Image (cartoon, rainbow, N blue to C red; front, side, top):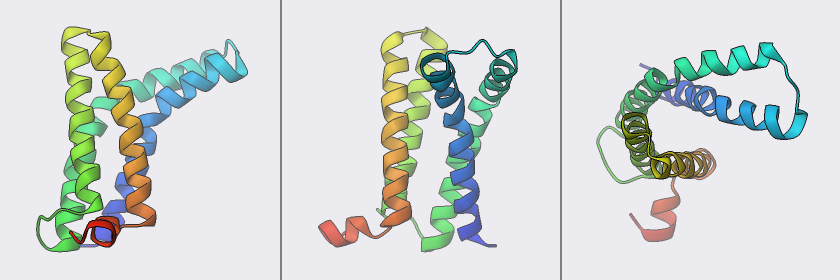
Length: 132
């Protein structure tokens, strides 16, 4: 199996998952349009957000274990832990409608994207910086 390809698929899934937030932000703050078509796209992306999140965690785990051959601390494992925490906060918001959980979910989404960029451009960061 091509585990590197799974990593790229995971990246595409993450982009699709954060796109409703980015599109909504662009729609309301930048373009300030009343486009019904864009709102339909955002709504469709929101409906697949939760299943994609679960698929992303599973795909990321398979990618990481497949690439490294075992579980160990790596920049990718930080991304995976961040994804899991983001999902837990998202579920907390979905269940309890607590605004703090939503804000935590959004902040952790940003942290996840930053960690993913670190993983893409400097996968051995933890080893180079900390000898791990």
